[in-house]
Length: 176
Image 1 (cartoon, helix red, strand yellow):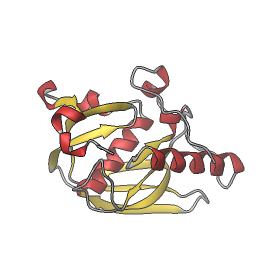
Image 2 (cartoon, rainbow, N blue to C red):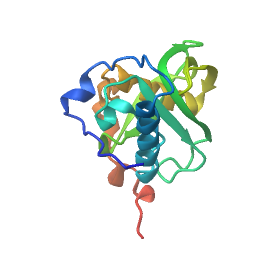
Image 3 (spheres, rainbow, N blue to C red):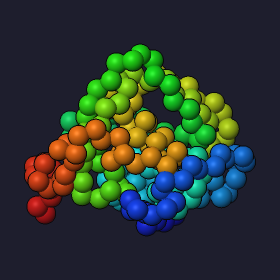
Image 4 (cartoon, rainbow, N blue to C red):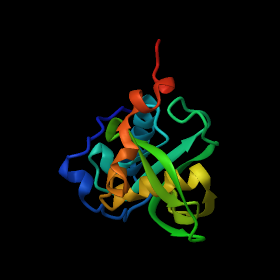
């Protein structure tokens, strides 16, 4: 399909709530999902929300097997999640570094629930229900935040924990 332009923080669409998907198994939805995967893959992302490419719909994708941007992250299953809901399984939270394709070149430390349960639908309208923890839980929470108009810098409690990737993590920067 196509690699789409990712909107950057400051674009008004990124701070709006997305609308639910009402029709599954449509060519429009299939094309959107294909473009999202092409875009996420091209930019070494771990996830992407439809609003990030200018589509204000409640669709997120995520997953990784290995990723240079997150070398320590455990694998996350490739998933399309439509009209998602997320709930914490416990009150335990963990602070961790996050990046975002809409906030390029930056990282920030954000507290997220360590264990969650998420639900939603696949592109055919079949229900998905999963429990997740660690990096998997962090990615789901991050991507679902986009659907409510929240970018990770809005969740940073100490701005000393926010900066440029090349300064904070020079080992992640490509030299090739």
